[in-house]
Image (cartoon, rainbow, N blue to C red):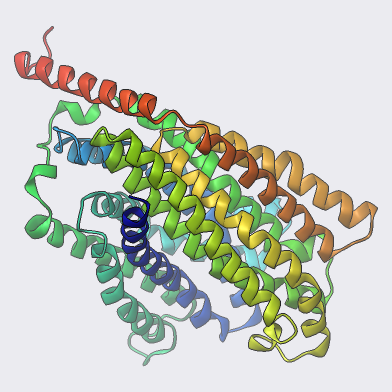
Length: 468
């Protein structure tokens, strides 16, 4: 069974990994295309992209993670139509959630000025965000649609295929709208518009694919039930934001703004960029495995196969450990030459080589923490995951890193030691919680939830007008 679970999780992980890398390329393409316009334009696009991630994309992904709890068990249960119902309910929640995000993005210039950003950069970043709103509803829809495809057996490769088709179109649009011929060249605003168009194209293709290829057993007709049980999604969604976005925020705000917080010089700032890109890239593999693990365990819980769910959990932890060791070995073997991939400055190369052992160390713990989060999502324990991440980063890791930086004068070393401590704590507690799981009890929870849905369906059928 362990060998079978290894093959299944590998089969699930590879397309998820491709999906996330390709989607990341959509956002990066806009920053790259703008980067050659001017220094202020590059700074503004980076600031706008970071603000979009912190105040929008991370929150959407946090709420969408709720579907990791609801959909897999629904699909393999006797009521597969609940996949469609829970997706409709999440669409209602997402629609309401987009309102405050729109307000923040349309008023971002005053917010950024209040936070001390330079006026020209704040203005351009606000323009970037305003045009990015064109694609925000599509981004939210895509988050729901992808979860649907991931949690329907045999459709893991669908999101990858869709984004694989759109990614080159996005690159062409970025070039044409930013640098193309005069009639269609828009300059700075062309990049966010190109990305927004790409998000909308992904939505259109996903809808078309769903109409013709998604199993109709996963569909649920639109009804008043789509507006029920929203409190459950909001509760889990807020916890999902705490679990998913808290880590995202820590890397965006502390990692990418280290030059402002720690007053780094150009060498340290270049080193920080190299380390961040390296760590973010290697993280995509365990993150994809964590998504695959959520799906697999959720499916097994829906089948009421408690023993197999426990085995899948154990195998995923071992896989994360192996992936982390591979990345750690790679960083240690090439640590003296790694920086040459990004920069030829001897000082940068030396500083990167001195910090890479820390990055290599936390590869193992980063992967284990990601898998623990995936298992907790499958169990509906987003709140536990949120408490774990918040305490790891904002109570332990970041304060410790600040102390090392300012009190011990360790500069960049202090920052990365703090982040490493966060991940060690997160991985240790998270894996311990997962290994102590009572999988028979988890199956009972799913059975009770499905029974409640069946009862609600029976009542709505008897009383279609809701009179009673």
